[in-house]
Picture 1: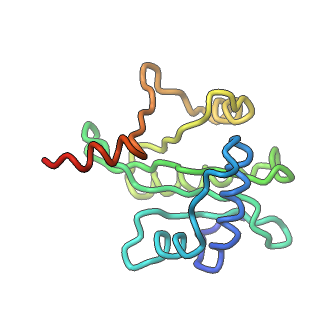
Picture 2: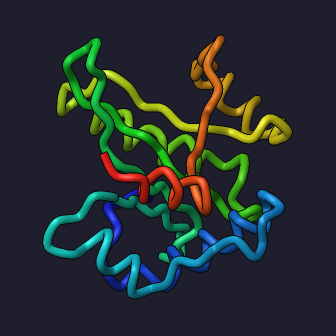
Amino acid sequence: MVREAVINDCPMILELIKELAVYEKEPDAVRNTVKDLEEHLFGPNPQAFAHVAQDDQGSVVGIAIWYLTYSTWEGRHGIHLEDLYVRSSQRGLGTGTALLRQLAEICVQRGYKRLEWDVLDWNEPAIKFYDSIGAGSQNGWTTRRLDGAALEELGSQGA
């Protein structure tokens, strides 16, 4: 079952984020806290959103964390999926598909024009899964990131 996350899910969401970081070979990269999640997902002006998947016993076994984007060409919002993670014991059972289906339904119901995300180029199981549901890659596009010292330097130069 997939549902919108509630504030009490934050400890489990963080646990799954940490599992994802291990899977993505970045076990020490997570700085997020339960308090951060509570504030950013459930505070007075949330800018990110989460859905969780539960197994038959009600345990959270998967997460989809996302935020809104805006297409200047389409003149419509879209969803950027920041994290999709399903515990290894639940993979291949439709859990990831159910999470993505929920986000696709939100897009359709709200008139959003895209659901997009990034995938590591070495993550062949994920790439095969995304191909199987019709999610194409953006040929000619690469993701760029400004963070750390480079972000500080550019952001400190003034306008």
